[in-house]
Image 1: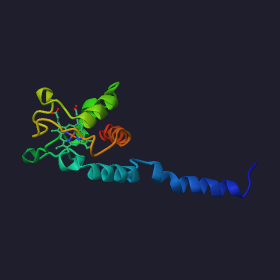
Image 2 (image 1 turned 60 degrees about the horizontal axis):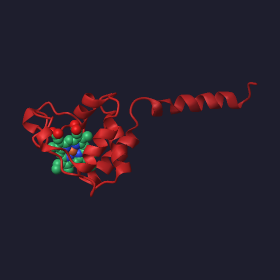
Image 3 (image 1 turned 90 degrees about the horizontal axis):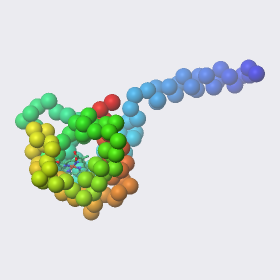
Length: 126
Ligand code: HEC
């Protein structure tokens, strides 16, 4: 069973281990590029800032993840809100956002990419 290949395979596994530890930064880069292209980052920040004088227009995505992560149906609902825009009469990010409502983003990003972004956003509190 043991051949010359076995130790080589083990080495390869050990060397590739760091790539699996922690976040996939390549995926993070792909997602921030997508968000930048779609214009999301003009209103949102990815990470929460502790400086209250810098309250963003839209809630930081880390806060979005903390609020909805693990909630059934949240991803589909959020993706719909991003596509169609939010209702200013149901604004629910007081003190976390200076903007009252999010405009519809369907002109800037399609449904598939929106869902990809949301799925990524919902991992940001990990
Ligand atoms: C013009 C500014 C603006 C842009 C551009 C924008 N947003 Fe928003 N976004 C907001 C505001 C303001 C809110 C908070 C709405 C509220 O209080 O209900 C929000 C809320 C959200 C929420 C939380 C919704 C909820 O129901 O809790 C998500 C997720 C989100 N935005 C993602 C995105 C994504 C993804 C994009 C890019 C495709 C984007 N936003 C583009 C301003 C913006």
